[in-house]
Amino acid sequence: MKQISTIQLFALIVTFEIGSTTLFALGVGAKKDAWIVVLVSFVLSFILLWVYTQIPKYYPKQNFAEILHDSLGVILAKPLLFLYSMYFLSQATHNFYEFGALIKMTALPNTPLLVTLYLFIVVMVYILDKGIEVIARSIEIFIPYLFFFLLAAYFLNMISGEFELTNLLPILGEGFQPVLTETLKVVAFPFGEMVVFLTIWHYVKEQGYIRKTTYIAVSVSTFLLLIAQIVFIAVLGSELTASSEIPLLEAMLSVHIAMIFTNLDIIGVFIIFIGGFYKTAIHFFGFSLVFTWLLNKSNPKWIIIIFGIALPFLSILRFENLDDQRWKGMEGGVYSILLYALLPLLILLIIKVKKKHNK
Amino acid sequence: MLIEMEVLKADPFLGFLIFGGLAYAVVLILVLIYYIFKGFLR
Image (cartoon, rainbow over all chains, first blue to last red; front, top):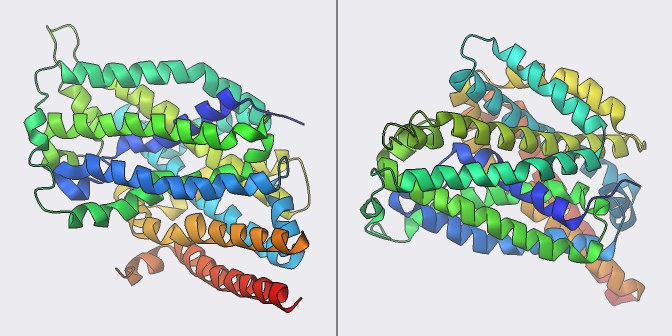
């Protein structure tokens, strides 16, 4: 069976978590306290991560479908698998459309969106068809560059002269209420999206290290997100950060150091491209696996190819433009709490009760 | 915080996920209660 190491799992989680979050100012509804929202959400997300990583402890090396079949029975497991496959497909269309639209906006303005999406999907289908090992190994190659460019972007912003830490003051100036309101959204995105890893845990070689690796990876990615929010607000101010379409690019464009380091938006495009590609790929891979198990098959190859061809059309049919995609994502994101938090928790409780009775 | 009906009309996919998730949460709660009582009655 194909397997991935804990280092590769770490790289997968960090890339997934950073993924599309570089495009947003997370928790910017709380204005200057957006970074506090990220911090509070990170603490709350530990409960979710505990639930996700507890399930494979009862069923090591078993895939999500086998776990559901054993704990709920085939009749209840099949519709749930279908529901999760649709959820992952929904998330994949969101990521896919968003990155296609942003690449069009920033790098390929004259190319039709469908062409950009098909260029994207051809590579994605190829890499997913090769299996989890290839995805993980390719992320392992890219992650040092991703880290380097992210840290370089933050560092250059900090020394650019536009960086004003006073933009973050006063801390909690409007009380704790805006922070709490935004926290629910940030727990859902990006932390709740980690639910897709329920379909990937069984590939991990050292099952005993899943929880530890997950916590470390999420902590590292949260640290990077936290710096991002501080840099965005310190450079752009909370108003401009909230109103700009891609704060990362806006911040990068404001860097002018000695007339040498200018027009650094290319660094932003690289970060967006890598993050977006792998985030879509992992969601699409999760969908393909779950849908394959639903059909009682084991090789997701044909599902990846068929739905891969359809994915650009599905994305374009679902979303009219970037604003429409973000509106649907924001409105629906909070309510997916049922899928990313409540259902896994109930599954875990059922497993626990059943195991206790079987002792 | 209630969901805007407009978004459900504009995106049936989202509606399916929300109501599907809700329905399944109810089913799983019933299953959990069944297993808990089954354990007690043993």
